[in-house]
Length: 293
Image (cartoon, rainbow, N blue to C red; front, top):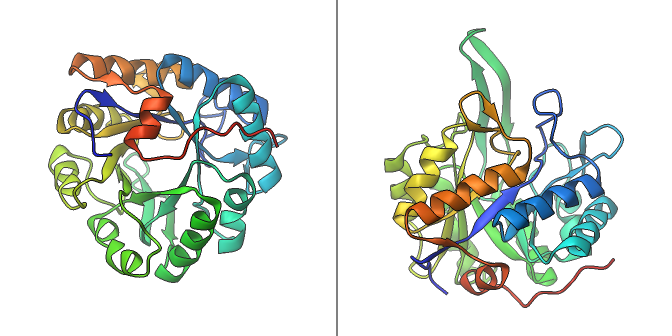
């Protein structure tokens, strides 16, 4: 189904892989904490949650499929949210990245669509405080897609730059991508496309007719990008993975706070947050299947 001007799908990225409690005290770590945050997001208007697993003891990233399974079970014990599992990681094999998808078979699996420089610059220190190459070669994308298709998980095509958006051709030709496709445009990462309305509008015009798309804005610029996406007819993502703040100096105390603001913004432009059932229809997802382990 194509985009709907009257509805907007809100995704909440609950915890991410890098955010920690030194930065924000409310970042969840354990499966139960993540599921409690998912319920807060659901109650505020989200229909999808984007999942990174964390080591329950240390809060560091976890790629253990059993931890992802525990998170899925805990969330579905609380609410019927659509589950979107990350496959983005550094320093592990493609098989390890996609193993949680193979085990749990979530509704959606995020797929990074290309490699890039990925950095954070400190104006105060006049230096890079985070600097890496985020490697996602085509061969690995192909292999991840094969597992996603076997699991029945719809790929969410995460595009940090225009070249990523325009990399779909060979994958369609191989039959690994199928229409209608779902795109996420990430703006605000140093090394990627600029975080402005012109860039977002350009990205939204590069995708095939009938596709759906959402914006992912990194840091406080997120709110301006959400406003643009909602006006352009796109869907939106918020959450403690991407941004801690409701406004400058005003830190959210839960993912639910961020979703509530996004829901208000939807209504301010005449669009209603999509329910879970409506989001499934809009994104052409399979019927709900409660994950019970």
